[in-house]
Picture 1 (spheres, rainbow, N blue to C red):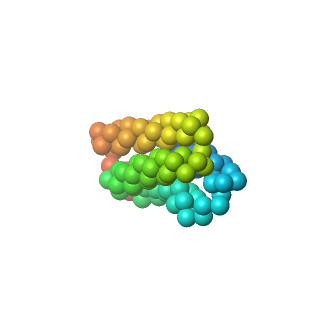
Picture 2 (cartoon, rainbow, N blue to C red; picture 1 turned 90 degrees about the horizontal axis):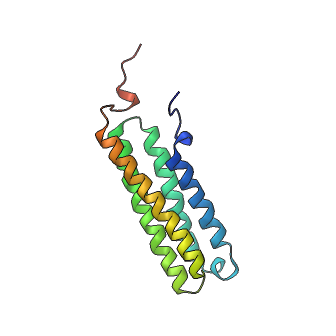
Length: 131
């Protein structure tokens, strides 16, 4: 059966969880009032999820890898914003540690997926012979 859609990818599913975690944190009373930071961290989290989806839909491993690197960079941006939120007193240490750990896990999954695609002999669906 295999992977037919980006929604089948575990890394996309985990990035979706990260988005939901970020949205949940940014709805907290004090955090929600920092409109600039809320916008930035949400955009960063959404970028992780969206770039995985867009890269998959491109149909070639080379393009997918390029978008996965963008997703991985956005994951780093989420982590940086989490530190800002913590430093401003918007997050508890437990909230920071939990979400930071999850963001690091998503980043590691993306990195592992990049390595897998780099070593794959398959070039992508747009390179399959037409029947």
